[in-house]
Length: 111
Length: 112
Image (cartoon, rainbow over all chains, first blue to last red):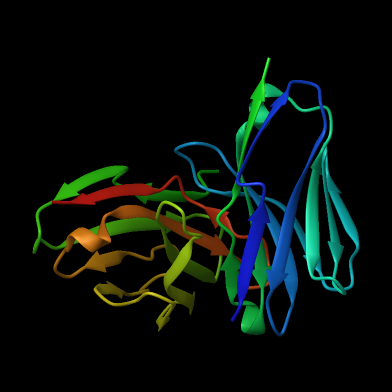
């Protein structure tokens, strides 16, 4: 069964600190791995897309990594800001780019 | 550049009523899709379109209809609303399935 699992479910960090969010995926055949940021009450916004041949991709303070052998991805946030408070969604792209969405990690950045 | 625009933002329906959720994009994207987002679950695909005149079912299509008469618009119709359709609905568009998807702000629907 195709699925995407994220951990932790929620996380609280202090402003300025770094954090790493985890994603394990079982998507076959696997095409790509995406990370989205969803602010409360808004639609998801794309952060990164990585194909199976890419190991890492950055978007400003966000860096995503992908290990296709272990079927794991992580999203690292550097020097967190209050505006980073949001839900972060991992998405696995499969056959004909069918997308399997995780349930998200809810991040709260406190001053 | 408006991106993906969804209307209305909020809607309350009674069981059995019908309505249309509107979605429009101004990026000339071929691929458009509708998702629903429920607490504790990932986004689930309802219907999608790969271009004007072409639509197909997603993961949870029952109770919904779509059409794509133009590149810009992709409305979602609820035929006879049920409480199980209470959800947040998102429309998304992209150049193709492989590309970045741009989401609208969502429509929050309650069916009483």
